[in-house]
Amino acid sequence: MNNLYLNAWGGVGSKMLTKHFDTYYYVWHTHWPKLPILQSSYDGEQNEFEPIINEDTKVLYIYGNPYNALLSYYRRSQVDKTWIQRHCKDLDGRYSEINPNWSVEDYLNNGEDLLGLEPHLDTWLDAKVNYDILFVEFENMWNNLELIFNYLEIDKSYINKFPPMKSRTSDWTKQSENIQNKLQTLYGELYDRVKQNGTIVKRASK
Image (cartoon, rainbow, N blue to C red):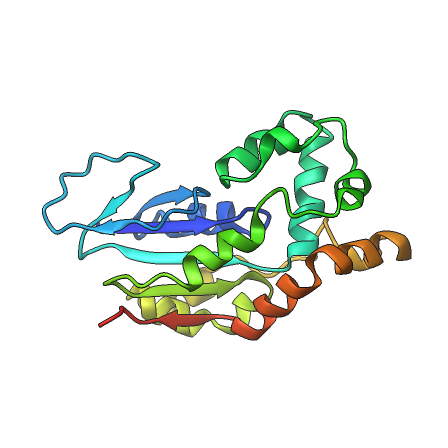
């Protein structure tokens, strides 16, 4: 069984994808933004901060609507107030500047991308690496299953086993007008970039 390196900023269905694709691959699911190094002789030992892959590894980057992702983070923080800081650290964000007692509105009032969602995406989009990367936009994923299965070299007859799309618990359009406006102010440009890039295969740099 080959390897699948799946990176995501969280709140975009990456756990669901990990669970589904572990039938076909050994899946390494991580949020750390550094891209893996292709090393043909690697022996399987891994360091999260200096990840290594071989030629048989498929690489996926999962991203999506940052408004919904942020709401998802703060929904989880209602159960565990330390979660948001720990996740921010996993993203290599400015976790020490986040107050664990903040609400999502408090975070938005801060006016800065402390989680580092934008640089996380920049790191991957701007990278010049010697392997292909499939960028998957979560919200449009179900319209691109054939592309995804082709990239992963999984027989398309298995598409019908892919989990169906469900309505999101964290839906920014169900928030107050005040919260919607603040989400757009902080993450509007990032939202537009996600939509512009969508689901694409970025080929290896020559």
